[in-house]
Image (cartoon, rainbow, N blue to C red):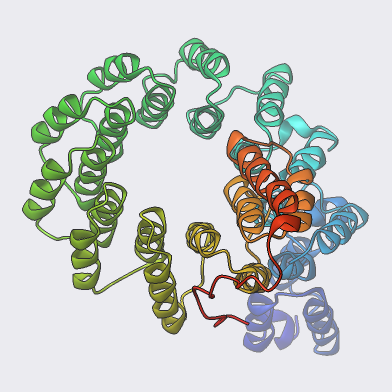
Length: 469
């Protein structure tokens, strides 16, 4: 036996141990032949094992073993539904539909773009889709519950049952929250029954979601019965039952539970202060606010809104001026408070300060601003506000925003614009009808009396400057 055949080359053995690609293995194979090491049985066995480990599998098996880096990277950069559709086709073309980690990223991208039905349909039509892990199906289910109509999420849940997939404790909370938002009591009760049949109703997450559902739907007694069955309630469970009583106007029961809590965090204090404000007990809310270990912006904003609605703008402004960390909700509470109490000029001055801070407005700020403009009757200001809404991409399909636009344009005399907006409303409330009818009556009345006025009648002096041209 030659010396080369008697012992392996340390260099070749080391290279085999470091080989991570098929190309590297091919280079080591050439080196073995060049050095005459092809008769060394242990080295050949080591080479065979390394080659088998790095051998290229079939395309489908390779797709199932690791995701395509390009597709995974593109999913992270996806910002439009068109891009999502292209990646959808690319996943199918490359045979990556069996890679669960990649499908999870695809589902997350669909959720971020608020189109969960794409991910749901993709998983449904997969070959042998019942093999998809339940956590992936739960992710799609949660996305449907957040962004799709309730019936779509419930249909996906029923499809799981039909395919023989057994839902777990993570399948129910998202659906129960969707039922609570839609106030769909029959669907929520059906999910409660399904959770009992599957034996997951005692899970802390499921039970807390049930408490939130019954509390929001006005069944505080059912929520309390579920809460009493929890051995060690979590902070979220305590918050859910307190909110249930607050939403039902039972501040006494909410305070009783609040006093019983072993540990209180800032969320519990905020909920109780807001509960007192909603029940109209501003004195109780102020006493509790003064007892807080740390006075939060949320609790202070609740007090500002409560005092403003009650007409006590002096106290509301005092709290607002003392608040250092003002958020958009604090500003909107103050703007709306002045507008609702007949002080549109003060509302505009607060809005000017708000603009100087560079905070992005929300729907509540815009609604308060439109209310102030409606009282002033300034058509130029109304046009400026509509441009302001477009500039910050405020959702004009929001019910309150659209109703405010109708009322503002009608009160400012732009009946043509008010009528167009009114006709575009999917749901027309009494407030919008009254706004348009009132201004039309005033317009017809002016048209009737206008010929009777003497020539050269002095017009009323402008009440406000056109400062928002």
